[in-house]
Structures are given as structure tokens and as C-alpha cells.
Amino acid sequence: MSMAPSSRRPSRWEKLGSTTVAQTRVLDLLGVRYRHPVRGTEKDFVVVAPSDWCNVLALTTEGRLVLVRQFRFGIDEFSLEIPGGAMEAGENPIEAGLRELREETGFTGTRARLLGTVHPNPAIQSNRCHFVLVEEAVQSAALEWDADEEIEVTTVPVDEVLAHARDGGITHALVLSALFFLEPDWLARRAGAATAVHLT
Amino acid sequence: MSMAPSSRRPSRWEKLGSTTVAQTRVLDLLGVRYRHPVRGTEKDFVVVAPSDWCNVLALTTEGRLVLVRQFRFGIDEFSLEIPGGAMEAGENPIEAGLRELREETGFTGTRARLLGTVHPNPAIQSNRCHFVLVEEAVQSAALEWDADEEIEVTTVPVDEVLAHARDGGITHALVLSALFFLEPDWLARRAGAATAVHLT
Image 1: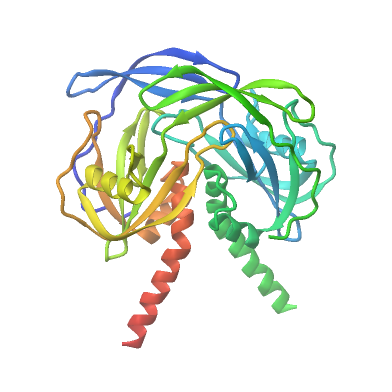
Image 2: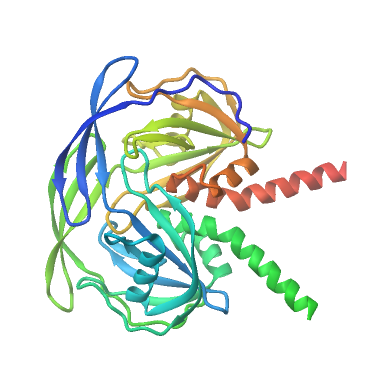
């Protein structure tokens, strides 16, 4: 990647220690003490520390994406999203993604693979979120919702999902990030399918 | 958008009240009490409550995007991002975006407009993040960094930014969401420029 023009390089701060400000079911709030290596100044920074998360892009053979609609307490409103949740101890992203997909939607699939990994917010949050692509998804398993979950499950053609997301119908930044990784894969897949049809 | 098949509709929980678990410089941590309208059960949910944020996609006339590289305390690592920060009281997204761009990078521009608005995490976080597109960006103003800021400023061709982001070189989910909104606009712009050149 060709970068220019460039200003001076920022320093790597030294982490001195961490105190827990608050502990909750879904995250810890930390105060992390850092020292600037050149200036020598010390300061506490706020860090939100949840476990890692995993979100799932589940495609049906008809080119539809599995979506869930839930009431979300953070924004006090409904939100249209892809399935996902917190990873459990010992799980890798593929296992977590397939589990969340099955529990929340009853869909299972084949050929799961990691499409990308992001930081929800590097400035103030420590965890990562993985995006798993699951293909040939079919609704075949029983739902296993958590006690407070009530989820509307639906499938929508991928092209409509992308358009709806850009029109403000999907506002969840992690879902939009997942679609950012999916889109070129999807366009190549669609072009391939068109070529395949053309060749027969 | 054609949705199918659909399971039953989730209920809208009733917000009963909110208590502050912790207050910090950049966010409040809340416990928000909700009641389920049908089951009648009550429960406290954790909500992270920062102020609204604004991130800026600043394009130069040469088709380069203004990027910043900073040490980020949330992930204890450097991160390549677009400029941005917390909105100040009374600011609209355009004003906040132009201010953050100028303060962090010294770039100013013309024709600023709102490209999209997202929720960083509807499940557990209340605020919004706006994405502002600024065109004809040029480095013309003095930097005004906050006391703890040290920022490497650079510009990179948009096509390289998109490729680098999909290769894992940009991991900030809000930046990837902003690129999701920028990409169709950018491709249309590039196609238009190619046509314009072809016609002359």
C-alpha cells in the first residue's frame, strides 16, 4: 500500500497495569494505566472488555442470507442483524458461528470458513469479532434461545440485504462490516453462477 | 425487501428505569431495567453509553483517502483508521466531522455530506456513529491534537484502502462500515471519471 505524505511515527505506550472498575455479565470495565515512553507521563485509560464475539453470514443455495430481528436493549429498539453472539471458552470461530446459527435460527450448513476478523472499537474496547461464512444453510434444527431471547428469523436475497443495509435498514456496524467482507465474494459467486448458466 | 420464511414477532420490552454503574471520561456504564410486556418478567441489562461519534471519509482530488495511524489503548496496539471522534454538544455530524478532520490531520475540504449513520453495537451500546464524506480535501490547517494524541497522517488511493481493509490491514469495524457506504459511491465516481476521460 502506497502511503504518502507521512507525518512522524506515534510512540507505542507501555502498559503498566489494569484495575477493574466494574464487572457485569457481558463485559468488564477496566482502567488501564499507560506510560508514554518518551514523555514519561502516566495516565489511566478506560477499556471495555467483553469476551470475543462471532457473527455468521449463512447463505442458502437460493442466494438468500439468514437474518434475525430482535429487540435490542442497547438502543431500546428493534434491530435487523445476522446471527451471532459471544464465543464460549475453548471454541474456535467456526464452532462458535455454527453453534450461534443453530441456537438462534435452527439453520445448519456446510463449508463454514472464516471470512474476516475485526476489532469492534480499538480506541476503547479490547475484544475481537469474527465473521464466519456458512454455505448451503437449511433450517433443520430446533431453536435453543437464551431465557431473554425472542428472535424473528428470516431469509433475504443477498442483493436486497446489501441495498437495504445501505438505505439504513441495517444499522449494526458489525453486520455492515461483515457485509463489507461478503460483498466481493458474493459478486464473484453471482458472476460465476451467471457464467455457468451461460455455458450450459 | 422480501422476507421469508418468518417466525413469530419478538415483543418490545418496556424500559422501567436506569441506574449508573460507573461514570468515566468517555462513557457511562448503565444498568437498565426492562419488563417483558407478555411474560411480565423484569431484568437489568448492561448498556454502554458514550456520546455520539463521527468519522470522516476525506477524499483528495487524486482519489486518495486521508488515513490516521495511532496507538489504541483498547487493543494495546497500533490501528490504521479514518479520522474521527466524539461529537461535541450542539454540533451536527457535518460540523463534527470537519472539526475532527482538521484537528487530527490538518486537512480541510469542500462539499461535506452525511454518507450514513450506524449503531456501533445495538445489543449493549446506546450511541450512534455518523460517517461524513468530505471532498477535495487538502492539508491546509494546523494540527490541534489532544494531550494524549500522536497521529501519523497519510493518504492512500481508495482502491488500495479497500483491498488493504479486506486483507486485514484495517480492523476497526466502524471504519469498515464507513468503507461499506463509500464503495458504491467511489465505484460510480471512478466509472464517471473514466467515461469523462474517454469522451474528451
